[in-house]
Amino acid sequence: MKTVLVTSTTGGTGKTAITVALGRLAQKRGLTVGYMKPKGTNLESVVGKTRDEDPMLARELLDLDAGMHQLEPVVYSPTFVQEAIRGRADPEQLRADIEENFETVAEGVDLMLLEGSKFHWTGGSIELTDADIAELLDAEVILVSEYTEAGDVDEVLAVKKEFGDRFAGVLFNDVSPDRYDELVEDAMAFLDGRGIHSYGALPHDEQLGGVTVADLLDGIGGELLTPDVSTDGRIERFLVGAMSGSSALSRLRRTRNAALITGGDRSDIQTAALQASGIGCMILTGGHRPSQAVLGKATSEGVPIVLVQSDTRTTIDRTESVLGSGRTRTPEAVERMAELLAESVSVDSMLEE
Figure 1 (cartoon, one colour):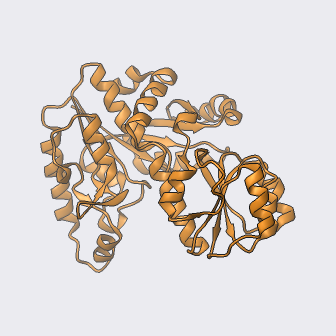
Figure 2 (cartoon, rainbow, N blue to C red):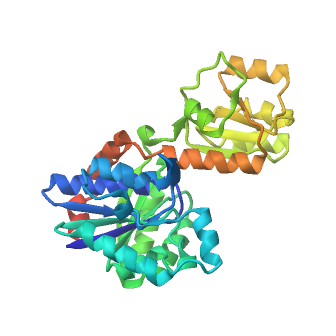
């Protein structure tokens, strides 16, 4: 049996879709596949219990018989972490629980996939980071990384150092067209020279890009102030409008498919945003309604405006959560990810290595 842990440099890298898609592709090659997410971190309430939705997706798409408590032995909730730092969690017992459930889920399979946490260092309070789990369960490690600037290679080098000989390689995902050649020709060659194998780069794909404005509206509990504007547009990222109106425009023009989070009383930022084609919606915080002039301009430009009562920090957290959970956690997204993997990397080589 081969055991592979898929980890990431940050949240929102498509780690879940890639992990499950690898399982699907392995099954199509005649391999039996198991799955486990040792620490549940993408939590939501389901029938009165707090669970991670990622194992539920894997269980459905990989047709697994294991129970949720086996696929997700540790529910790493804020309450759990609080208890851990108070000394009320036993790391040795947790490790034993993970090992026991791993042995059950992995019995008789050819490939055992372990999905890491949102951040590879999560779990340090109980001595169960992704590196600790890889050591515990004798897993090789595949890193899923973004690439938005040359400095991202620093994170890859740091992860390689953390995992040591267990580090198998890095897969770059959601790479924008303007960065693709730089990544393939320069960054991957640089990493190869330092002994880091790159499996390839998956290009940005519109089908995996973000969530609709309607989904974002529901997720953050906002009020739509522009009822005549469509909410079918997709949002892939967000910006926080805390700069001056004059400096905002140049920055806003460099983005695409973005939600702008700013105060309802910042008419200068709102006006600048309506001149930038890459702003897909505006989220106004603090319950401050914008002027009628801004609402009229937004309606004519087709830019939805959403009003929330929460402060900016809370709104950022909620928006980040919606974007992170919505991007690649659907059956359709997994199928599309499987297609991208098949088109862009050598899946056979990836599975064999």
